[in-house]
Length: 278
Image 1 (cartoon, helix red, strand yellow):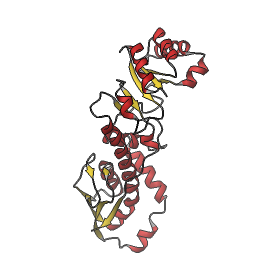
Image 2 (image 1 turned 135 degrees about the vertical axis):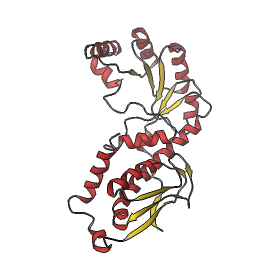
Image 3 (image 1 turned 180 degrees about the vertical axis):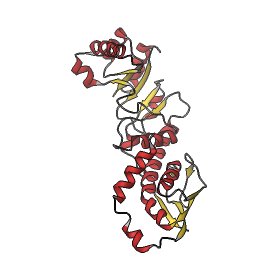
Image 4 (image 1 turned 45 degrees about the horizontal axis):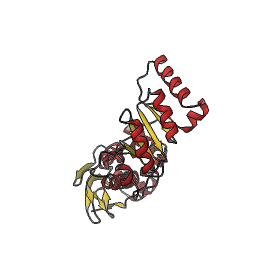
């Protein structure tokens, strides 16, 4: 993860070549202070390690005392960490730290709820590519902190033959065979997953083989059980499509290997955090 690039881009967006005029106007250059990260909600904390990188990028002399590490359960009134250094530096870093930590903690909290809901099964909760442009790696980091697992990071690290690929290509067999030819020609070692929309499509995939995982998209739990009998452990399986906190347990109990949930990164509520002077 190129944290330095992300942080520099974010700071440049906020400061341009001008600087923090509010802070420069009101705070003496030599002033020093101490601030605390105050928790104002309940959930899973995420982004503490990132906050350390942000403070260091703004001012390497800022010192942090971490009281609660990433992945911890938190509740209103707790203090996650203290940051001490030049007042101007603390104020300049404040909003970027909070923007990142609030979002990451919200994602980690939502992810953890899904993970806890299927506890005791063998299924794993996956994220998707439904992320905020420019923040994907941070959001997927938050998923891991919350106990979930990352699907592919992008279009570059896995083959994912979705419905449009299959339809544009002329069918399942053509899509798989062309993909294998492409991988061989370009000497690429990438996992191949293919989306199926019906039991008939599952059977078509089984007839061709040459994939690593079969996605069962918008299948009911009952239909997934039928699909798993057909697949019979020959390939990894993934359930996807509109799966909620209320329904995920039923999907996990079918015996499917993975359950992908786009809502982890596109429908979360940011956790309320504040950076306050001590």
